[in-house]
Image 1 (cartoon, chains in turn brown, purple):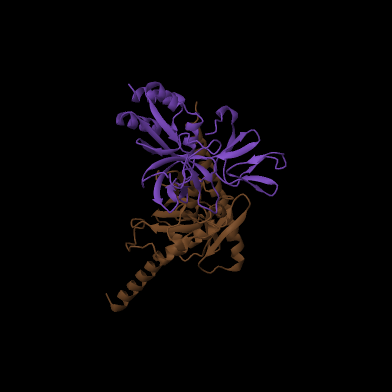
Image 2: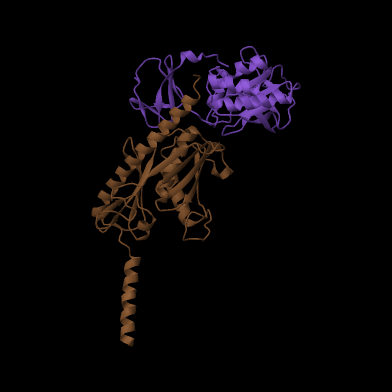
Length: 265
Length: 232
């Protein structure tokens, strides 16, 4: 084998590798890698009241992303400096379980910048919704734990927190649902998973009040053509409404079940 | 303890936060209880639970665990500290309640109660304001008599949901009646999700504790089988 031949083989191999690493997100049939259509959500499973110690708790799965939420409060603030004299302070802490990702074995602390950012997004989402003025000088703690990670962290955190807050009986004007959408080669994709997020797809997370149709959160970390913003936002809002229907059904069933169990007859 | 018969209440429907309730805001004398707010011309819910109506009063019954103090309610609390003229009492709410030394039957500056940290008390909420710490008193303000308020000696405390306390008080659940037919025991039901119970022997105390704990999610027929299984 000549040197030129070896060189040619190596080039072919390299192009093949580069092609393989840049995977197609949407197949020829319009199906995504996990078999969903572009505007299809992942399967949602949720269950409120999973922890007996917490004032309110919930577990939610969206596809392979799994999250556990616990709400405590209104209770006394941990530090005097956190006291807000006319409303409750909302404290959100997010942690990523060490076993939540297969590829990454780095330990993430609670003060990880990315997690803090998500926590502040969750806090901002709930601040106008929870009627904090009823509980002056107290604190509401929301603890979120990602048990398995497959993209869509912000949206699952918001959805889990909503369920847990409802379970805790904390007064809210309305409840919030969140969903993400992105744009990849003229396809608008709903509810991105980790592979799609890693492929540099611009991802927009939207939190919506489904009844009044108000937005409480719009977050995007990358660039997106302005013409695409509206369709992406609309699709995410549609996703929120779909998630809302699932959550609504579960919570209603749960409340009904609880009251049936404890009825005298 | 307000004796409200459970038959007077009607459970209307399951509601979630943000649901609009078809009630006329303009109806004269309508009272909105916890979980309902007026938003413009509509009445919306802020909690998940069951909408209950009693006369012209409407509220939402929830399965909450955290206590929000309300004037006139009776609570079981734990003395957690002592100030110059008051005790600090933990009643499970967002703030520690205050129990002044003078809020007892026949109390004077010289004749003051003597409690230690960790003692259990049964008291009435005399002041509940969101901007102030709640205040307690250990007498009935209409006749200045202790009427069972004060230190709770012996026994033990059961923590449960707020709604279960209400159900025990209104006797919506038969568990107390059923247990009472078999053995003697004493209950002090606080509206703050704490029930103090006592009996003659430790065996009976733990029996009553277990029965009450298990009966939280049982209906009256199941309570009957539970009691017959526990008490021989």
